[in-house]
Image 1 (cartoon, rainbow, N blue to C red):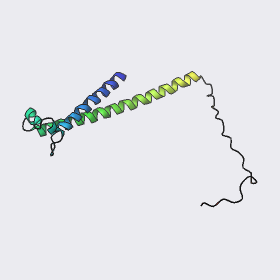
Image 2 (tube, helix red, strand yellow; image 1 turned 180 degrees about the vertical axis):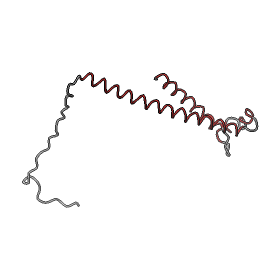
Image 3 (cartoon, rainbow, N blue to C red; image 1 turned 30 degrees about the horizontal axis):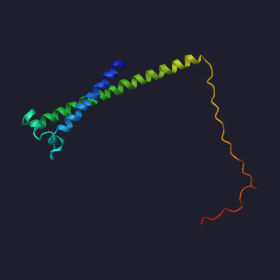
Image 4 (tube, rainbow, N blue to C red; image 1 turned 30 degrees about the vertical axis):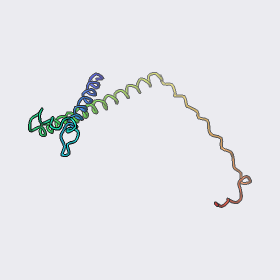
Length: 126
């Protein structure tokens, strides 16, 4: 289970980096970062329909990214609950029915204020 989770994390990282690259290479109406790498680079590599191909690839990569992320979230949430319950069971077995010692915190000493020590009038704010 741990190996599958690590492989899914690696796949999510790779897909997210590819998705970032796809979005940055796509030509925009103002040129964008795609123009900084040579202007018509996408058209020369993918042909005249480069925009539609890059858009389709972006949609596919986004779908893969969301699918992997959802699968990873389900696996991690199931694994965490199993891990937590196992950890609690192990802790209870180690306690062997003994009571948990209470932690004492020292109380802060508050000086007592008597009516004689309190001022009779409150000074006005200047």
